[in-house]
Image (cartoon, rainbow, N blue to C red; front, side, top):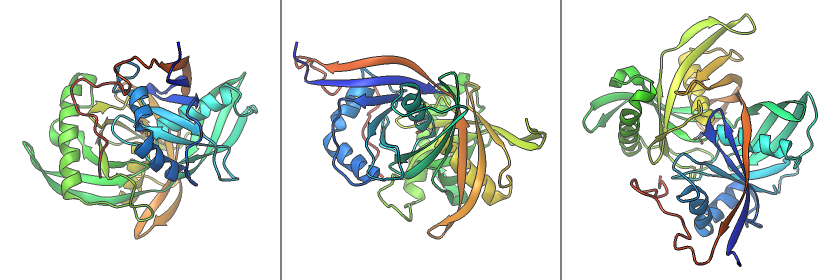
Length: 350
Ligand SMILES: O=C(O)[C@H]1NCC[C@@H]1O
């Protein structure tokens, strides 16, 4: 059999969120930066995203990352991020999967107890500290690109809900952040259908009523996620200092729960907590997902992005390799771009 496509894929997950890492089979992608390559890929190679993420090879809860050589001398590797309805500039759970796969497969050398590396994401450089022991990456701490708040306590009119208050912040993806209780929701898996449906309705209304544009890159997508948040709890942290703890449930397009606590959503929330004075620089923010997995986050520095005050967040979590696959496309396969049943998987146009 002569296949018309073959991709070498290492499947992984970070705190429960899928993150396939394509380590071979794509070939060179034109573009100077990873953002340039992201643009080229979305315009000329989107069939591969569908092959990886759509049925029968993928599922709506899958994400994929394509490893590429970086043109930056200060980056070990680059990667572009493929999700069900967009090519995000950055992704926390996906970055943890990429770092874990690079080190555990030997594509990059592992040093113990800590390996430091730099990856080029479409959003820019992501510095990584991987805690390693006996060949296992036990924890990935990433320092994200700056996160900032577009709108605080903005009112939007949501069909079927009326006027509600939302915050809008960027942390690598752009989030409408809503207090779950304020719209009658609780952060439990039993509420997933309501979370999906309302999350999609809120993000659409926010996208239409609250214009956003990243000051350094207007091509970065607008609001594509809704983060439903729980209350802030203050208690003694593992280092004896006060930490802040909370829950969140992120609805990723086209409408499903992020299984992880969402690294870019946590980054966006960190910017909001800083703007509200609810979190000190360096203070531990422990963010849990609806399945109970957790990321530990901190404000590493403060900075500005255009006219916005911003924070530089660090996010730490764990990832595991789950399988090694050769994904192939038989030229007689009628679904050369996969298929979806139900919700349209159109790329989100901001
Ligand atoms: O952790 C994150 O940032 C990602 N998780 C799925 C959606 C986001 O890209």
